[in-house]
Structure formats: C-alpha cells, structure tokens
Length: 267
Image (cartoon, rainbow, N blue to C red; front, side):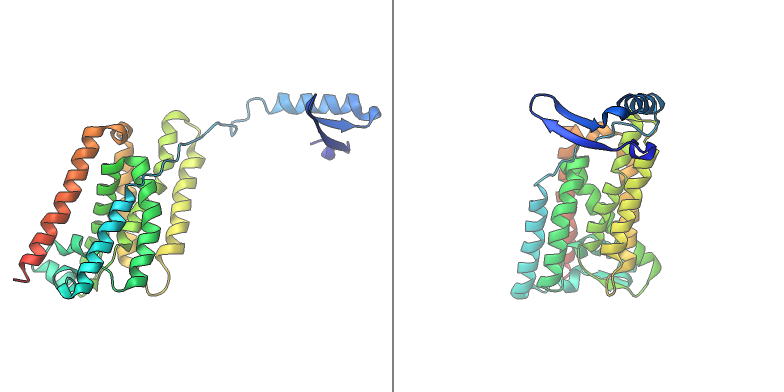
C-alpha cells in the first residue's frame, strides 16, 4: 500500500520493539495517514473471515488396509476369490448383488493393491476423522458400492475389481466437508465451493487417468458427495459413540454377509 503511494519503507524487527516499518523522516506523517486510512477502509471487509477447520486423521484406516491385504493374500493362496467376488454386471443382474461389495476388497496385482492401499489409507483416514470412525468407514464403503451400481446400470457387460471406487468415495466425502463452515460463517460460500472444486480437481487427477475404471470412479465420487451432504445435516453424529459403533457393526456385517454369500457359491 505504501509503495502504491510512492512511499518507500523497510520492514524492521527487534527484540525490544517487535515488528515495524522504517520510512524516511519527511514521509513519516504521510505514511501514518495512509496506514490509518487503509485500516479504516478495510475494517469491515467482508472477506476477512476467520474460517478454520480442525483436520483430524483416524488411524483406524489401517484396519481397512490390513483387511484388503489379507484378502489379497488369501486370493494368492489359490483360493480363487476373483471368480465369486469380482464385479460382474451380468451376474449382478442375475441376483448376485453381493459382488457390488466383495469386488472392493479384491485386487489384480501388488501394484494395484499398493496404489489403493496408499491413497485409501490417507483419504479414508481423513474421511473417518471428519465423519467419525464407524460412520466414515461405512459411508466410504457404501460410496464404493455406489460406484459399482453405476457401472451395473450403465454397462451390462462390465467386469472389474478393486477399491478405487471406494477411494474416490472418500474424496467425495471430503469435498463437501467445507460445507460445515456455512453454519458458523454465513459468508463462507467461497470456502464451500472451494472445497468441492478442489475435490473435483483431485478426482480428475487421480480418478480419470488412462486405463482406470472411470465410470466406477465417477459413481463412487458422486455417491460420496451425496452421503457427505446427508451426514453434514447431522454434524453431531461424528462424535456420537453409539452411532459410530452401530455403523462399524453394519460395515463388519456387510463384509461378512457378502463374502459368505460369495463363498457359498464356490461349494
């Protein structure tokens, strides 16, 4: 501001007086007047809002990484889990709905597993920190299933496996996290849209590269957005121990039930 008025200044700091500006003696009164006028004009600047969100990371996401690693190890031990568990639109149409869930725990190779485990650990940990351990995990799992539902509806011959739809669902959940600031700061519209746009940019970066399952990624991301909006209508659920316990139990029940149905087909 001072430079715009052709007043040269130097930033100074000392242990005794703290931070300050040094200007030439002939410019002192004019500089003081300009600083006072600047403060007066910007005293009620509408964009000066103290918008801060606590960013929490839930290391419970390590349990999910351990789960997909165990399933990968079991599959490598010649259990042939791909056949009853991978996402197959034609099989789902014949009533094998469990494939919408079981496919998320299967991976093609070590590289595929490592990519989903790495990104999933971070994004799922942030989603669980934002929405609660159980609620965040269940929501991400349902978002991944939503991605598989999308592929089933669009492509009747689709076959796939992997947790990338669930990872994109975490991204969708996190994209709407900024919406919680709206309740505390009515002028936080910029932060709300900024969070959604940032999520979309990350989705384009991580979820639309060549060779990826774009339909499942888009469906997972969109489902995550919808679930995130729904959860933000009841923000206190994240700290509700009973709600998170029930959600965690539902997640465990879904994993056990769907894999029991899948494995029973192998007998």
